[in-house]
Amino acid sequence: MKHLTVGLFLLLCTVIAQAQPAAIRLMVGFPAGGGTDAIARLLGEHLSQNLGLSIIVENKAGAGGQIAAQALKTAAKDGSVLFLSHDHTISILPLVLKNPGFQPQQDFVPVAGFASFANGLAVSGGSPATSFKQYIDWLQTQEPAKRAIGVPAPASVPEFLVKAIAAHTKLDLQAIPYRGSAPMLTDMLGNQISAGVASVPDFIEYIKANKVRMVAVLGSQRQPLLPDVPTLTELGLPGFEDLPYYGIFAPIGTPQTIIERYSTALAKTIAQPQVHERLQALGLTVEFMSSEVLAQRERAYSQSWARLIRENNLVAP
Image 1 (cartoon, rainbow, N blue to C red):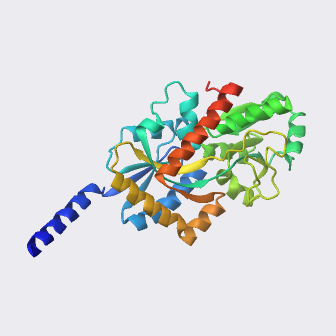
Image 2: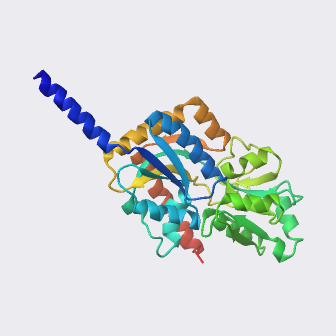
Image 3: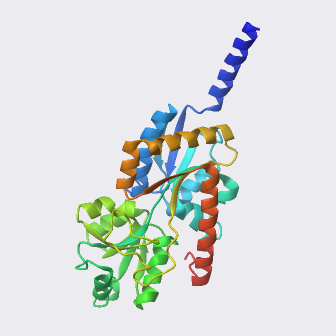
């Protein structure tokens, strides 16, 4: 019986070992240097330690994360490929593109969520404005070519926000899509564009360095790192209260044992003080969401934006 028990134990160890990948590719749908990339590298380092697996962050940039999402759909279903993404790719693209090449609820399984965040409008150093009103007043004195506002991706919440501001102020504003926040910020820092809309994590280091100034944020309340910056609701632009999320996703069909192992490791990772504090410093509200909770969050967010997109005719070009 003893030999049989040992044999079963060794067999179980072999099965478990075979069920786990040797390393993980953590895909990011945006270029290196942006907020999402910084978050992925921070989590990748510490998640690797907690899992005992090598994690390589792979920037598969383009089309607002669409290229990375399509790659995840066809990736191996053994836990060796994951996708760290926020709301734009998972919830918004399937609503505004006729054929995005993936359907999150059919092609992906949520591993876990780890944070929510706010988008905001920031002005570049070349603008004299220090408030939303001052920026709008300044825009009214500028020629149309100077009324361009950068956004990290087309058909995104930031682009919808530019359209909402244009309608609210009755100004002819043009949203300029970039391949992620990093190149957009390069043009902002060079005063090629007067402002940009992106996530607080994308802007926060430049705000701290006084290189850009945040003049408005989305959400139902002000952000802890930016207590003096009003919400759009306060400024008379309601409808942008739902905060987007960050999560990690795997291809559908990935074994549940692997999903649960990764989810547990992520919960442990974001609970570590050095990780939790760093994520907060990047402008995130850290909150663990299990696979089920993240799936519910994604569905509710998609339903909310489906209504806004339909009512305001916010569609991809």
